[in-house]
Structure formats: C-alpha cells, structure tokens
Length: 335
Image (cartoon, rainbow, N blue to C red; front, side, top):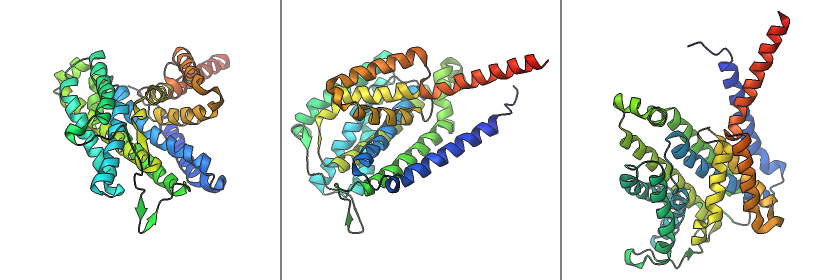
C-alpha cells in the first residue's frame, strides 16, 4: 500500500477550513449586529446539525437502518420538560438527564431490534416513532400524560442571569458550544476502536466476526450513544423554544432530518451537519412555497442521489478524480 503524498496537505486544508468556519460562527453576532431572526435559524442549524450527524453515525458508519431518530429527539425534549416542570430539575441538569433517559430507551429498543437485519430494524424503530405520539397523549398510567404538549418550560439561568428568549445571542453561543463539542465527540467515536469495530462490521461483517468483534455489542453501543446525543439536543430544543408538542413527530421533521443526512452524504463526516445548515436555511427561504417546500426538497434530494450519490461530501471525491485525471493528462502531454 503506497503512501498518499497529499495526505498531510489535505489534512492541513481541512483543519484550516474548520478553524475558519468556527471563527466565522463565533463572529456572526457581531457581523449581523445581533440579528435575532438570523441567529434563531442558526441555533436551529446547530440543533439539527448534531441530530443529523448522530443519525449519520448510526446509518452511515454502523450500517443500522434506524428510523427512530426523531422519536429519540422527542423523548429528550419531553423528558427535559417534564423533569423541569414537574420535579423542578435545573435545565443544566435536565439536559444530560434527558440524554440518559433517551439512551436508556434506545438501549431497551436496541435489545430486540438490533438482533434483526436491515429493513426489520427500520420497521421496529419507526414503530417507536408511531407509538410515541399516542404515549405522549395517553401516558397517564406511567405518569407522563401531557395532552400532547408542554408549555412554559423554564429557561436556562447562569449565575442569576436568565437566558432571554427575545434576545437569542446567549442561546446562540450555547448552541454553538454544544454543536462543536458533540461534533468532536462524534468524530472521536468514528476514529476510536469502537468506531473502527462497527465500520468493520458494516463493510465486512463475516470477517469482522471471525476476528472476534461482537456485532450485537458494538451496534448496541453506537445505538445508545446516538440516542444520548439526540436526547440532549432534544432537551436543548425544549428549553430554547419553551413550548413543545407531539407535532415534532410529524412527517416534516422526519423528512427534513433524513434529507439532511442524504444531502450531506451517508457515512461522510461532517456531511450531515453541513446538510442541516443547507436544509434549515433553505427551508425557511422557501417559505412562500408553503406546503410545496417538502416537494421541492424531495426533488432536490432525488437529483442529488442520481447525480451526486455520495452527497455533498462525496463531491470532493469527484473533484479529486478530476484533479488526478488532469494531472495524468498533463504528464502524458509533457512526455
């Protein structure tokens, strides 16, 4: 196996790009003069960027076709709201606790479903998505009946300072911190021994199992980790918007999140996060189209799958092939 001479240069370019992107995000409030409207949608980009990337961790890297991501997001949101409203739990504690509750649900759902294959996992996890709406409405038997919505969810406070919802800048910077921390965490998982194990199971399952890699254990780990990350972001969303409802389980949330992953590129970090920015901002830009927005997004994704099957991040592969082709032709012409 030869060494790619452009590896360090490519890594340096990626690193410089990431630093530039982070600096740009840090200074956006100053550039836009604290434009609440714009920063609100950037906060949503942070929330959906992490949620989509956590979904990509399951589908793209572990090869598990799960359709329960929005259910996990909703569980995290309602768990946080109930913890703060009914038990008086601080939102700072409510976010990690909501993540742990969601991870426990993911673990329990994963125990039976991850013993199945392919589309059967998708069906079981989507069944959770479908049943959760009824549970939110009619959960009195287990103490979680909400009537389908929660309101007046308390805001975050920091040393006596309450995050105002009519001034988004404090939420913006907290969302940015969560966005960066979770993306780094997901990146670490992908490149850790755990990540290499489930990628090996995805690409060469018989060989990986022959080497002693426990398929069920590693899939259960990544399933629970993804549920935890998604649950924390669902909790942050609940504290940010103050009012949540079972509408979160609607088709539009599900389709948009799925489109983010497909557009960014399945199994290509951080494609889903980039897709989240494009879809969240693009969806708002298409507001005049009203209910036709999802149709336009669907057509856009179909064209992407046909002409750019690797998503946006896959486009770099095509650029690299073009560069090599041009270099090869240049060498032939110089001979």
